[in-house]
Length: 409
Ligand code: FAD
Image 1: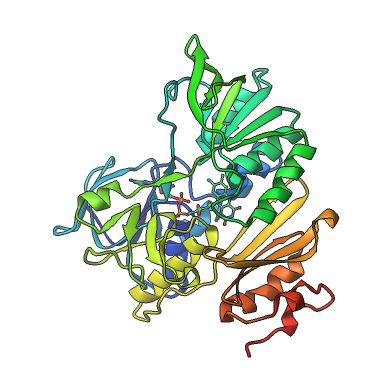
Image 2 (image 1 turned 90 degrees about the vertical axis):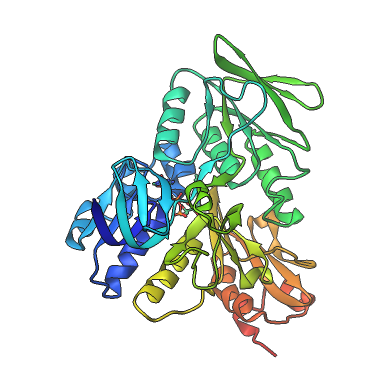
């Protein structure tokens, strides 16, 4: 049986950062990274951006060149799926046979959430989570299909709508809540993005649920909505979030549910088993201590650093300001902090100029910023979020005063 000191399950942003961080910090033990995908670790964000647009080749999305892993003696087992964990014997059941670990780091991310309504399994329905997903979507788009129905008004749905519009396809987007980005941003930002997409010709239907996918000859031909309407389309993209890939860990007895629970050192409830990235359910200090999962490159990388420190004997609790970005058309959105639970918003700048920031406050303290083509606010806002600085709303709204001028009282 193969045996490694550290086994990392998942070759995404978290897994790759984990292996790299361990070596960077001088860890000399054996490391294996197991990934269900056939590829070496690659960047996921371009999947709904430059890769879908055909502007970035896959080679340029590799997180590290192949030689990086070989030089650092990281054994990568691609196309290898872990199906069970025996925490007492420290043995993984995998499609490549049993593997023994001394320390296990679970960085398995999540699978694209699928529809469950009638017609959900027809051909022509696509997710955007892996390279294979986008390759299949791109191949389908080239067969002459033109009207794309996007289900889900989150970042992935909106980014793909922007790319497809640019590629000359017609797009209709459905969001069951009353505005796009409702789970992650304030109403002002949602309104701005809805207007932008409509100006580019995207039809946006909010407050509308898809109840059925209709089809002919085994292929999707449209959707039926909860108000009874039927919208015909050539293919469908489903962007309705992920299901955390934690089933083997939960089956082994790890505490969790919507993700696997971890403490401030990213330790699960199983001995010497850590979890990081999209699948890790943790109390986030920038969400008022609420138990959340964060789906971002930042969270995956910073949690990897936390675990690496723990393994080399320098444990440091996870405490990193969340940040994220999204590219749509010529708009670069950069977010700092988490707006969850905000009780006031302040607009800095004029959305009509397509450069502005939305500052989120809770009990007078700055907790988050959404910056649209406003990199300076984004950079300078970090300290305000990190320190929970109190700033009066009218002062924050004054764009002539840079955010770096504000300090803790
Ligand atoms: P992943 O990167 O998903 O990696 C998990 C890996 O585990 C996968 O390789 C998977 O195959 C493997 N795996 C799963 N189960 C098993 C198993 N049982 N056995 C073996 N291997 C397994 N974040 C941003 O910050 N900014 C963005 O602009 C942005 N855009 C995005 C656009 C798209 C289209 C997507 C899909 C995500 C985007 N994200 C973005 C989110 C970001 O990519 C994720 O938060 C990040 O990839 C999480 O890293 P992870 O290591 O936790 O999981």
